[in-house]
Amino acid sequence: MEGNAAVLCGLGAWVPPRVVSNKELTTALDTSDEWIRSRTGIEQRYLVDKGMATSDLAVEAGKRAIESAGSPPIGAVVLATTSPDRLCPGTAPEVATRLGLVDVPAFDIAAACGGFMYGLTVASSLVSTGLSGHILLIGAEAFSTMVNPQDRSTAVLFGDGAGAVVLRGGEPGEPGEIGPFDLGSDGGKADLLAVPAGGSRQRFVAATGQGLADARPPEYFLHMDGPEIFRNAVKRMTSSSRKVLDQIGWTPDEVDALAAHQANLRIVSAVGERLGIPQEQWLTNADRVGNTLTASIPILLAASAAKDLLRPSDRVVLTAFGAGLTWGSAAMTWPQITPRIDVIP
Ligand code: ACO
Image (cartoon, rainbow, N blue to C red):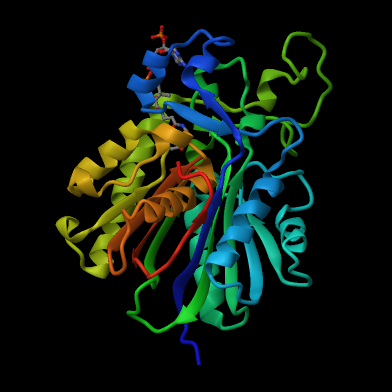
């Protein structure tokens, strides 16, 4: 008989095959490898080719997470994404069907880079209800399709990819248990990071000008106030992580791994320093993947576990922040788990 604590039992990740270096970006943008590395720590990212969508990435990561869990029956699929295949309907039902999961509940969560932490909280709650059995949670993004390829202030930051976890019911205190959680939002700062047009507020209008590769006016792409986002990201991830640490009763030097959203390495460093968690415990791979939004934390976890940087019974703090604004954190102990990941970024 399974208990109602949510326990991590499957982990997988997948990135698209095309690697794009900083140097390659300099052919089309007025930027440099030096600028990108020094401001963000990013050296390369994986990007989708034309024709590849978020659901394609989600299916690959989901398949691997289910295999990693030993292919149990899956009772529900939750997909955290900022770049759904279509405005309507949600992408999760299609992903579930393509994974052979017929008739299961499947829905999207839209909380931008905070989305994986929102998803983890919702998926854990589903486990606790006992209604759904094993839950598949995927974070997947083809967000490069929403970034203006001619805007150097945003185009260099993001990468595409997907990561996924499977949660099961278990006993309180067993390795792999996830919680406590902290979530928050501040819609008063929504404009700091937004794609203004294309929804019900600023509706679609046909482009009249020429120039952009696919003729989309600039308001259909991401707009960002970088420095303000930086400040808010550091503030919110730090305070949210502290709440979780207080709740679980761990001191910063008792934390074995900090899995912070990989927006960029400067943000991760600032959060790690303010929390007082020693640098050796910060997990990082933004240099290899860039900012993959909702996919960031599960790709980081899969890559870190594959590199043996996460070991059974490790005390882990997960924290993320994104557009909305949204943020969220959780504590967990690391289980005995073998991630499924082909390319380890
Ligand atoms: N190449 C060269 N120069 C650039 C580039 C580029 N790719 N992008 C901007 N610049 C220029 C700017 O035009 C500006 O020039 P100016 O001084 O002549 O006006 C100069 O560089 C400095 O720009 P700043 O924005 O002040 O640079 P900053 O040190 O703040 O770094 C950065 C910019 C990296 C975007 C930083 O603000 C940041 O990390 N912000 C957080 C952004 C983020 O992570 N967003 C992701 C989504 S939210 C999340 O995941 C947390």
